[in-house]
Length: 327
Image (tube, rainbow, N blue to C red):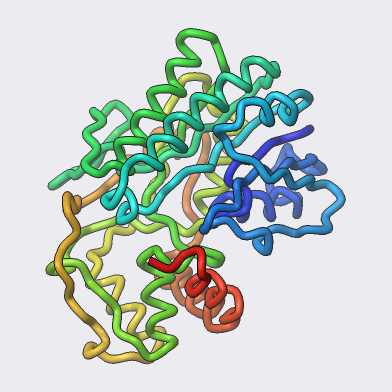
């Protein structure tokens, strides 16, 4: 078996690759992996087991049709993690998000068709649904994205579905809630807050801090992606929820406790434009059809995540303070 993973040097993609190479996914033991990544600011070769004989690394952009046409032949499956993903950056400029998330997905789908790839999993986000005051979204809920990032992911989802409907490509889509865990770039809320607190700095909470998110450990998310890869149906969408809703203030309070900081470390800042109030996924479908359920509890996972950042300052300081990422 050969699988190509886009965005393989990023937070979620690298976790999937490491687990795959450790034979952690039933049915894919011994699989060979092509780790494909553009190595933008959030991609890090150090996230991958560089000397594993079953992995080949390709430095490439998902918008590069020529390179993909050279690399893809002979692969049985593609898992597409590659994306611009930070909402704040999309507020400043949506163009890179349209290029990578929409254009890159289109290029990848076209290339998979041309190479005869049999199986594609397109990894998306709950943010495509917009905001929900109560209840939870099902896979049939309308797509009402409110940020340029979410809009670009919604467009890429629709592009993926169209390649199933039009061309018969066996593609499935996953939409997950907020992820956390080791190796996450320090621009995101959890690692930003952890690393700031470990340095004795304050943490910036948007607005009143009452925005609600579901939280899911990266290992549970990747197990769900594997289940969809193994058993998901063509043209289907699968919500992947954590089932654990928390306000940003509640997340902050737990991180303060785990990092040994007090409430004076909290600094409220002006709210982000178009900031969604609440996300909530109904993941009954993947639970009942594919047997998925999360294994890592929120408090347990956060404690382990704080411990990882505490033990790996060289990794996160290099990411947080690199010249490339300043500004």
